[in-house]
Picture 1 (cartoon, rainbow, N blue to C red):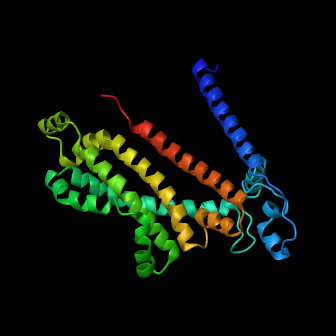
Picture 2: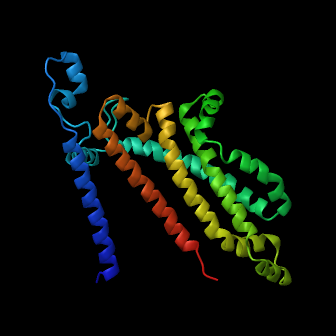
Picture 3: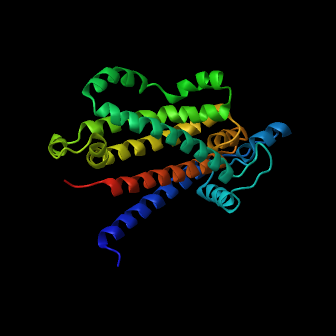
Length: 281
């Protein structure tokens, strides 16, 4: 039995979506004009229906829906270096993101754990963390390409850099914020340092750590699109750029849709993990 609150939420959400589609279609109709005549054939072929038929520069919801459905029904086709299915492109992007992300987790979580357990380390390292954290990950791309000399590895490195800071700072904060009473009890019971770290500090800090991981995965997915636009070759970022070079706005919008869906799925996975490790005092 569906609860009234759930039904209300679904109704409001569908209403917003329908209003969005109506507004979109209205913009398409408003953007239509008169067809131009006497054009050079090559120019007319380049500009397409926008000039020759007076069509709107913005594709209609139906056009975008048809494009998305075409990608869904045949996501893994491979017709050459510049013509691969969106499933292949997303697979490349996800592989790069997960590679850099898990490398960052292997470094950031243990390091943040050690820093959080020492006030001296926190105060000594905080200026360096605050200096590096605001630097745009893409600012590292030229240096990575120059030193690594491989575009794919450079993209993974950029994901590593952008993922490490939220996990490091959240892990440090989570460990440092563990209630003193719990640590005092473990000392009173003469619990060893390793066991205290694993049985007291880690469970207490786990929600904060996973929150940092959730923030990192969102940033990593955002950055990979921009990084792949720079390095080219494969990936959903390159797919977007290639569609733009082909003047396919429909393709660009459909790619944005898939980027959003994958990003939402990654966030939902980490949200489930956060719910699993959360606790109430």
